[in-house]
Image 1: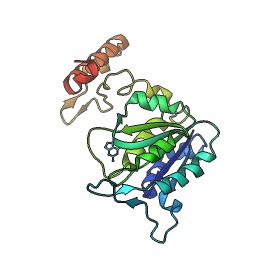
Image 2 (image 1 turned 135 degrees about the vertical axis):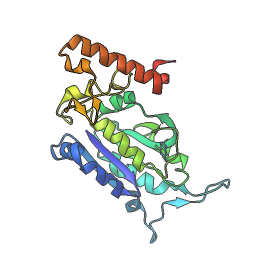
Image 3 (image 1 turned 90 degrees about the horizontal axis):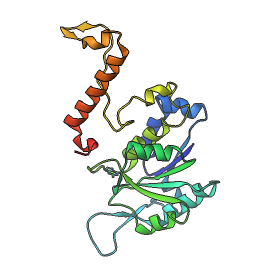
Image 4 (image 1 turned 180 degrees about the vertical axis):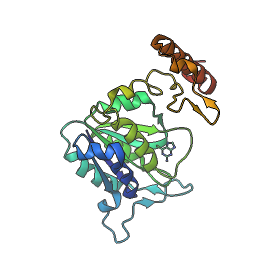
Length: 229
Ligand code: 6GU
């Protein structure tokens, strides 16, 4: 899978060189590149922002550098990429979004800063690929980089081969619409706290039932919205 990110703070994306995603890149499963939007400017100050037409607070990202970045990055692409604009005004990113995007060959994350990007950049991108505006939740970040990193990690770990133990993907939170059950390891008693006896019973049917009950109870308590309640 190929993933590009366009940003004025490409250093953020060094986080993707760590751990499993770093290994996936080294193994050629994931081809990630961060592009500095300022490399597509031509003035001495490498300007990427300007004041909004119609007035209002703050600055907007101007269209020209984005147009050149897209022409450069999307031009090399063989099939239609998905162009993701990080935006608190977008659809909310879910595990189902990650699953869907993990099946695509080429993703391009356009990371906005300031008060946003000139709307024509989004309209232009739509002529080059499938555009999505995506938020990672109902709060505001200073820019899209941290959101893009969260999405890239959630997507890339679903690419076959990236996670060695594919079974660990099956029983994690959100894989079946429920939160994960609580887990325990040795020792069986620690600082007076005991592992639930059922987990030491060796009765696999009973353990499976206990875990499912825990999932439902936990989900009901902290995320009733997931149960449609
Ligand atoms: Cl994708 N971007 C920004 N700037 N803030 C956010 C977000 C994205 N998702 C939630 N808050």
